[in-house]
Structures are given as structure tokens and as C-alpha cells.
Image 1 (cartoon, rainbow, N blue to C red):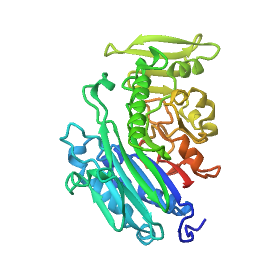
Image 2: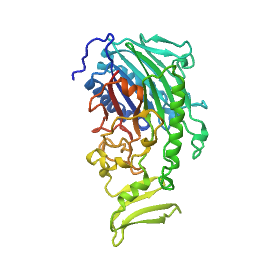
Image 3: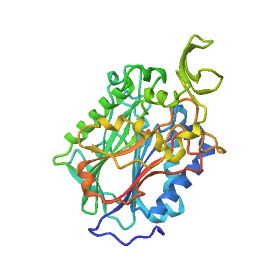
Image 4: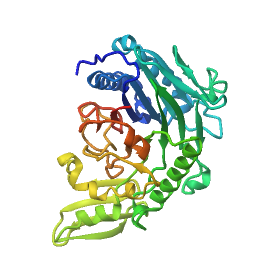
Length: 392
């Protein structure tokens, strides 16, 4: 596809939804910004999208107080790319940069509108649509409070994640009318696994239960904002992880055993090792996950491990997902020369997802390669961006 599409009247809009946790990108901004933007633009061009919905998590990275000013420049770099500037003549960006707020989420919703597409964003206060006629960027420094009626955003209550003193996880909802079709787009960032070993205490783990509770919270709030059911797309870093007890069993093959030990710091470790030899199939500690051959998670696009990807079994009622046929999206090495190697801190998994409600599943058209990740051959930080292309 050459990226050119006919003008839109009342026909379907060709859309792409992209979710990207960019925390580590902002930590190595000068090194990674151009690589990431080029991969993103190449994807937009290849699918010929007319509406681009980019949901960012961890805007500003871990050092968000120092690096948050980089976010506006990053969005501008995307928007001012030669192809993007010519093709997408309007945009609407919402970024939570209020680092001192008790409701801070570090979420960014960036929407780009093709020059031939009629697009309107919902004003939740006025209960009406407003046409998007120009490029606009809204954060804490640029009238975000005044523009807050164009979105609904909330950080999860602290008791949803009692394993930590503070969390910036939450969601941000916006509603769009593309041509004559209306849909909701929800940026979601759920809780991570704080400890590898704790995930073995029960199945589902306490962290998976926290995520389930939070996602139910989001789905309920989004649904309650709709007078009638709308096609709804939930995409973000759901932090879904593989069932660790099943992963350990997978590596504990015949002739191997699971050995519990304590390291020099007095912390518990687990090792899957050969009973009558020195071979180690897997080593785990609180923040280490070291299989003998990490690349097994990439073989056949991760298919042998998808049976352990069980958190989607208990999604809130009405939420669905297209079949996953791509490799894990996390945690990749932040190394320009090793874009397909994993970090040793966590078990690889499909953290970055795109879910839809039944109304969306009924309303959209996709092809067999619609749900995928991209940036396979370049370093995009510790997360690979995930996309869904569809006609609405």
C-alpha cells in the first residue's frame, strides 16, 4: 500500500491504534527518539492510515520531573515529520504532565487526523461534538485544565495496588466522531509485577488480581459515560504477565528439579537445575529472570508460551481481543545493537495490548495482519509498540 487513500465522505475511516510505553525512551532520548519516530512513521505510511490514535504510557520516563519537557518536543517531532505534516493536517494531543498532582498518570493521548477526514472530538461538559480544525497540544502548562472537558482521566485508587506506596497508573478516555461513525478510545496503564517470586504464591497472582480489579474499574466508568453502547477501544500497557507457576513447570523438564536457596544478601532465589549435573535451565530472584536461552520466547513468535498468557481469560464482561500471533512486547534490551534481546529482570510477556468491546468487534473490519507489534529490528526501549489497524 502506498499510503494514498481516496477522500472520505461517509465511508469507513481507515484507522490505526498504537500503544507505546515510552518510559525508557525518555531516559535515552537523544539516542532513541529518531529511531522510534522513524519506525512509527514507516508503520503509518505502510498502512495508509487516515486516523492515528497513539496512546503513550510513562510520558517523561522514570525521571519525569526532569524529562517531562521532552514530551512536547517528541509529539512535535512526530507531527512535523515531512510525511506526517503533509498527510495529517490536524491533531489533538492530551498529555498529563502535572507531576505534583495527586491524580498524576503520565498518560499521553495523541490523535492525528488525515487532511481528507472530517473529525470531531466530544465535549463531555457540553455533551456535543466539536470539529477538530487545527493542531492543538494540551498539557499542564498549556491550558489543560481549560481543555479537560474533552477527556475523562482518572488515577486508580491507592488501595487497588497496596504493594506499593504510590502508583501513577490510571486511564484516559476520549470520544471521537470520524465521518459519521463514533467511537471511544481509552488509554490504559495497569499495575506491574513488583516481585517475580511473589507471583508464584498463588494463581492468579496478587498482581494479576489487582490488574483485573483495575480493568473492571475502567470498563465500568467508560460504559457509564455512554448513553448508548459505543464501539470502544482499550489500548495501553496492561502489564499482563505469564502465569509464573506454569512457566517454572515448563522449564522443569525430566531430569531437572526446582531448588530454593538464599543469596549473599539473604534474599530468596529459585533455580531449575539438573539433578545430576550443573546445567541450569532457569534462575529467578525478586527482580531477575534468567532462562538458559532467553531467545526461546521469540521462537515461532512466542507461540509455545501463549498458553501461559492467561489474564485475558477473565476480562471484564464484553471485552474481547483479536488473536495474538506476535512475539512478546516486553522486556527488551535498551541496546541499539541488540533490539531483539530481552532484559534479565522479568519474564517476557505480552504486556502491551489492544482490547475492544463487542460493539467495536461488530463495527470494524480488519485483515489478518491487523494486530501486530512493530519496531522488531530497531531498539524502541524496553517495550515494542503494538498496533491494530481497522476500518471504522
